[in-house]
Length: 300
Ligand SMILES: [Zn+2]
Image (cartoon, rainbow, N blue to C red; front, top):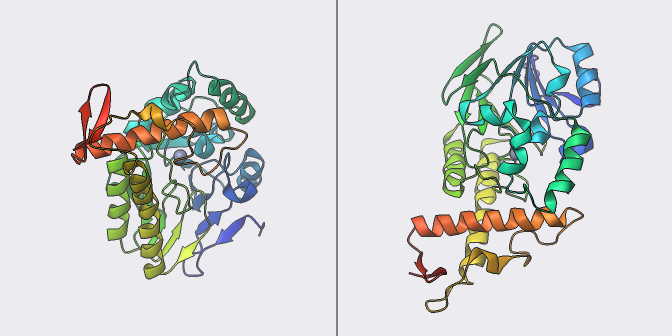
């Protein structure tokens, strides 16, 4: 078998973990193959073509609209594409990505457009949308449950196979970076989604940017650790507020509150960081930790 195609368990010979190019690092991601279903198409077009020669793939389940999970859609012109309703519009209108990343008419748009052109993104026609708790029957005995896990995007979904207790969590990716810098991202939803996954009885997990993790206990710990990344950001941002002097989201600009350091995509990262800080402000407001004063916010 090719080295990027991994059988997960001898008990389930029809389920494969498909390792993305560059170990699934952006702009690539990992996939899961179950009989003629693939989840996400970001492994790279080169690997997708290789995979297609070995396996007939007739159905593509998309975890969400982001380019690193969907750039290979055009490799499957005859497949049925499914996605959650909330993410359908974007995948059918890829020219709206920049608006949803909050970078239209900013210097970052150029950085990103170059990348998009490299990935050759195309609109995808969605055959059908799925919803939370839908069961997709695959082959004779596999039942793939859709778990709507919004927060990263509004339609982000995870998938849980009931017999193998294997879950694919897409961009609740259990790495050390949590991303919610979309116009359609929501921090409180993100946390609820992680908690929803903690309630599942998962034996084996794969994510979009990390390999296989096994063991119920380890998986729960990993989910908890992932949530802690958000809580630590909460703390770091909250220490900046006082009871007297109002502050604004823009006061955090370029100060590495979320990105420890900026990379060659600095223009983009500074915008993404501010959008994420805005999500923390939104959360603090809901939790009544801060209140508006003048043009900014103070501690309640
Ligand atoms: Zn994503």
